[in-house]
Length: 386
Image 1 (cartoon, rainbow, N blue to C red):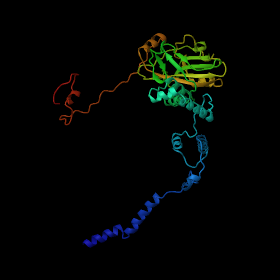
Image 2 (image 1 turned 45 degrees about the horizontal axis):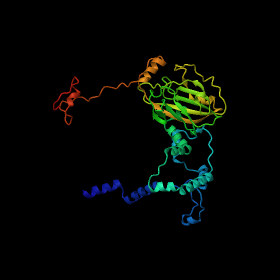
Image 3 (image 1 turned 135 degrees about the horizontal axis):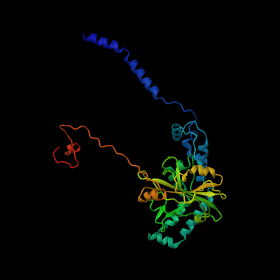
Image 4 (image 1 turned 180 degrees about the vertical axis):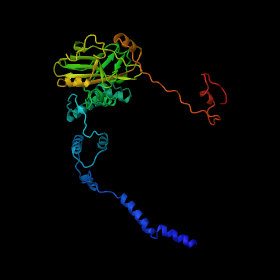
């Protein structure tokens, strides 16, 4: 009987167990086999055994030039960013630079200037003495000026991109703020505007003091707008200040197209962005279409679109400077709505649902000591085991 059961089991599974297992291993090996590349691999012609015979770049400039040329060549593979763009559906979407053109300084001049400074520092006995006694101090003003001249504009572009300034004001475009804006509120410059810092509506009640480096015969346009403040249109803006045809850096001598209006972020809407934009003019601009009445206390008249404003005057103006701050509701916003805008103040509140309690258990196990307090009527807690 036992032999018969073994014989029937062999008939069900098959005699050729080795062949079946061989087929399984063969299929797994075929799946793990690597396919040939679709084209030539990078650096395929370089022989690692004879590295000394390769041409040296000799300078960083030559290496950078060679890397840029290699990056422009078409290849048969896709990069990680190309795969991400393909998933998002933005294969050919590239941001357009609408800012001021920048001429890269000569590398040779930079090296000569660096060597000159090194020789001056080495021949300075007072500097050498301060370094030995650990009393040397670097002035922060010089550090800040050097940062604004070199890497500062690129850092500000990344910061503005992080806050979504370009996405909301100039969709599909960006610019590098080459001109640094120095903005301060208050008579004693108590509240300064940097790049995303917090300024209260009380501090920003009056027009700020704005300064920047500019030539005497140049013309500028200064704009203050808020992309988060519009009460009806999610993509609309409110213009808070617009001054055009500014000679040099004298804001008071410019043409005030729209007078200053304090921020009024509605209660319950969180932080709002307020952006200062500086445009450089190639010639005087006629702002008749953008002019607002004096005084302008109507939200309808202050509705604004930075992109439309730029498209109207894009042949004459170019974005050059950028600064922005964040603002949240305080008590002065209520008086701004009631006195200046002559309207009821909108208040946005979150209606919280009642606290959910699961059905009560007659004999709770593993529950806190005040388990019954959540089911009793009244607000005073009762003390007991349950």
